[in-house]
Image (cartoon, each protein chain N blue to C red):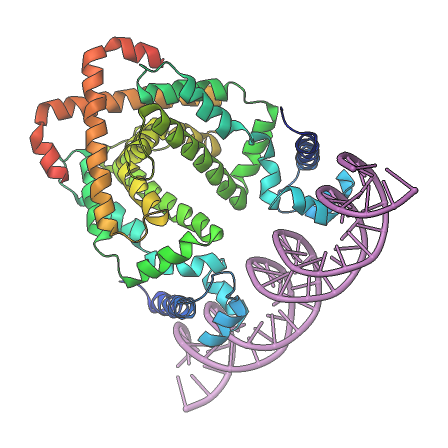
Length: 210
Length: 210
DNA sequence: GCAATGATGGCACAAAGTGTCATAAATAGC
DNA sequence: GCTATTTATGACACTTTGTGCCATCATTGC
């Protein structure tokens, strides 16, 4: 049974509302748009709006809904012998390829709206949690007791974070794909430097951390 | 001139307000506490409250005010030949040692209050940005153009994130210091595994990421 | 057809957060 | 010590968010 009818309808309305909101926002400040306005334009009541979205911020990110789910699935589906960090990064690359026009509108909004920056953080957190769970599955570890998936996910996400930070920050005019490339390059370089330092200093450094 | 008198006073009032708020919250839900109540208890008007805090969430984290600044300074002050990641982690260790009772009350609140979880995220982000800047200073890099400080900061923060995630999540009853130890152990293990994998597979893996 | 279930709209309401202005307090200059 | 100027506060009104509640309407099953 692929999505019962009710769920389909619900998704459609959510999509409709989010589309209306983004359209109204094309040349405006996020704060200046009220929910009453969105609701009226979409032909529903404000009360109904809040049955589909928990907050005004929520509606802007609606179209990223399924990302976390897909990313997790992709990671699990990767070849079992692939390095975990590489698996995450390759899966994520696929996902960013799906960025569409709405993403660009979104970036402008996020840049100039603190409350949307928060929402973006939540979004990324969801993505991260999804990655953590996927890695735990891959490695056969229990997320509740073992911190390794957490650690690996954070490390694998480092380039993504750097790229996003730049994109939503002072380099929003550049291609996100290009920024990600740059971040991955920096990642590889730092990782290799770190490894080189370790193999040289060895136990001395391990002791220093402790 | 160490802090003009006005700034001192301002800090004192902020501290007072935050203390009152935390006291009122000892056995209550965060949402059930109104700003009117805090203001009245502290003997100021609601309008004045909002001159010291930008939001209700803000007041809970007030006592962490200077952490980011201190952490950044600590990192810069570390021996120049110390490994960057180790420098961050050692500095952070010092900071967590300063966790006091208020931190425990805070954990309970954060656990059961979504809006505080957001604030906590923002807090951690500030900490991270502070680390990024400190690392850039240390390495003589420009944060605007070079992503390496970002990458390094994220990697160095991985154990912290893991520890915090557990602490604010399902292991809030344990010592945060202990959780951090555990995270650092996991970090070292994964880092070493990563390095070992690289030195073995070498270029094959670098190509796979690309 | 009819009953039950669920979605919607309208209303009222609490609370957050902001603009504005009058007043009180602190500070500087003389 | 007195006045002028700046700065913090309080009071009030206002917009908006988000929620509880209930009557109404549509959908579905029988």
